[in-house]
Image (cartoon, rainbow, N blue to C red; front, side, top):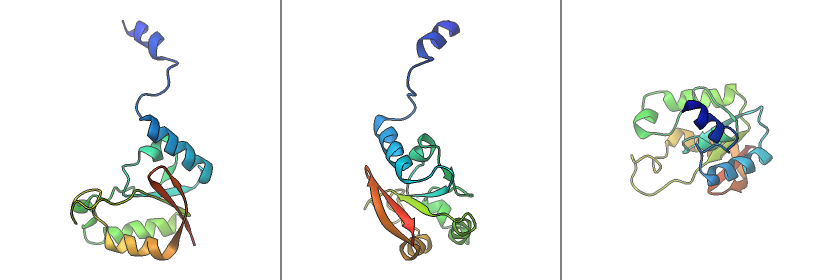
Length: 132
């Protein structure tokens, strides 16, 4: 049975990502060199994985309960600086409430991005920012 499944599935395209994720990852790959770290802001990272981009370390999704740990936002900014990140890929924020994932804006990181990066392109609903 395992052999039959392998034969059926071996040369099919990956099913892990939706077609839109693959499209956005392809667009991002045309804009951003793959050998550079990228900060994915307010995004779960599907395009990061599909496009084979390097995340910053520590990689962090902007969950409110995580970002409000004292000193964490500063640590992420330090990582962006240490890794010499030239690119930010940002997903638009929702309006569901201050501490709701997808709507929560970590204030220190938000101010840093606004003062150090500028808009260059979009990839679907994602915004691509480049270091000033």
